[in-house]
Length: 408
Image (cartoon, one colour):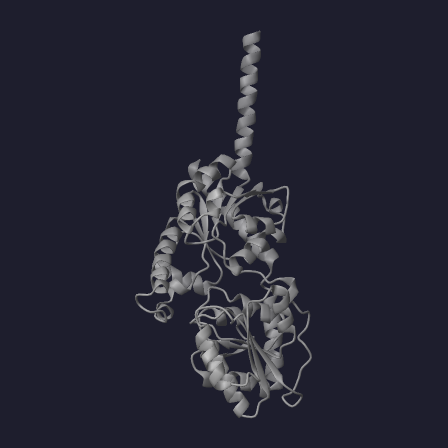
């Protein structure tokens, strides 16, 4: 009798274990490697997908995030979210990479996670199945890389990043891209990847307007132009400053705020151009990086938004200006036409005369600026954190299900 009871208990334990394993197989436990999420876009993305929806509504049992303490503290507290802060992430970059390579996979397995989302394609983590997210575009744009000196640290860093990202994407079970443009360009280096999903970033509600602002005319006062970006060699703020000078000489009362251009590798180039074009600093302001609340206020107080970057994976500040309902003069490079489509007037970002003509057409043509502002505002509704989160969780579930099916 005692033997019979023991056998029954063993059988029951086995069945319970099988049920737990089956539940885990059907319902993913997601690990997120955010250990190197340092850029504003990466941080905003992580907050966006964790805040927008409850992943349990999309079949996700639990989410575990590995990151440094400052980022973890900014994440929501939720019953389904577990935060991990390895001591190595407080040490040097070399220690962080070593931990990511040697320890992360073991830690993921110990928590019961069964699918990994890596938010940085430069990761060296080893875990299967995994989804790698591509954010960087600069390493894959040959012409843009040439802006940096051949034997400089910047050029060496870009080559190393490209090698790491190609390797990471090829080894991953799935790849997340922010735009079709990025997916096409990067796959020209990696070769066709097995599974690809395009999931663009969302836009914070703080940037959204329900309608385009009331129209204005060039005779009502100063026309306020804004460009939001850090100062880098592919952002071309100095060409925008040149265009502003040309507009002033043509009789247009314009002013320009370069929000965020107070820091970055091209600051001196910008300041030298401002000193020459606007020595009195009467119509050009170069401002430091700002919080989202301040940036949104700059946009709401603007008449025209200018976006002159020649290299982006997804242009976040452009979509924020779209949500603000502004008429936009935009670079014709990269994914910008894909994102903005008919919601702007395009220009060559390396030719001040082209920027001049684009802004001039917006100033002089009331029906044009009203039309493009409406198109941009309508298109901005496609970019929401809810959509981003839902599609991300769904994709992770698909990758997990596909891997489980292959193993069975």
